[in-house]
Every structure is written in C-alpha cells, then in structure tokens.
Image 1: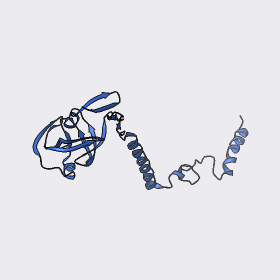
Image 2: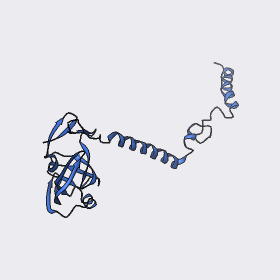
Image 3: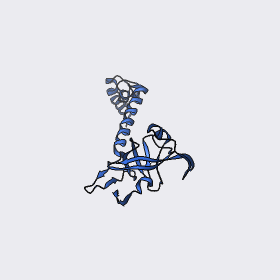
Image 4: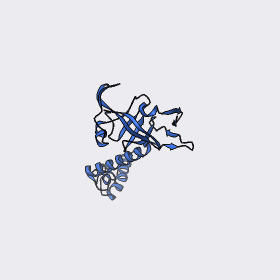
Length: 197
C-alpha cells in the first residue's frame, strides 16, 4: 500500500467524524447529554434511593402475603383443621381472655404461653411466679390458671397460661399442651387436626 493510498484511507475515516462534529480520535463523553447513560442519572442519588425503597417495599408486601398463615378450617364433623404454613409450622388465630392472638402451635410446650406485654393488655392477673426451663436457658415468668382460650370454634374456659414468652411479636403466643391435651390431635402430611374427645 503506497503513501497516497494510506492518506486517502485516513481521510475517508475522518470524513464521517467531521460530519458529526467530532474528530476521529474523540470518544463519547459519559457526561455528554447525548449519551444514553446520563438519562438514568437524572434523578441523582435521592431518586435512586427512592426507586430501591419502592422495590424493597413491594418485595416486603409480596413476601408477607406469600408467607401469611393459611386460615384454619372447620370440617363438617366439627374438627378443626390447621394447614401447615409455608415455613413448615402450624398457625391458628384465636384469643386469650378475649384478646385476639396469633398462635404458633407447639406440641412440645407444656402451657399456652404469652408475653408479659400481652398479659398486661389482656388483663391477666399476677399468677404464681415460676422459672421456665427453655432451650435458651431459664426464664423467669408466672403461671395463671383458669384463663379462657379459644382457637376457631374450640373454646376452653379454664386453661393454664404461662407468661414470659420472649422474642415474638406482641400479638403472638404459643399454643401448648394445657390447651391441646383437651383434644385428640392428629398430624397428617400438610395439616393438623384437633378433634373433641
């Protein structure tokens, strides 16, 4: 390739660049308005933060809906059927001393157990001081007798309640054997059935 051919080739490459108003050596500037990236940065850091907060909020709502415990079912024979939740546990809405609560069914717990805050809100009395032996160590609390507890249509008027549950939201409680022992409990693949004895 001769010198003239090389000069002609370089001129041909520079011609389109001159038409666009830049030299052949220039590169697109990330800060130039014509660059597509700058359109995404118009909002600035606050806009990006708002966008991600909205995304996280939508994910939170979707996961809450997805993980929401399934409602209990009353069979034609009067049995209470508690479906297994997506997290593998059994939950049931009920009440303690007339105050609504979301029970986590715990067949290994001796008592129906609530937090101190819930007990105060439900108007439960002082009870008998005790020490609960838990997997996380000893826990000081109290036991109150003759408290009405209901789960769906099942209602027991005199249940022993343990007060001292920690680490759960205020409206949660454990549904233990002081209630469950009054019923025949059957565990099937994806449901727990409570039947009156």
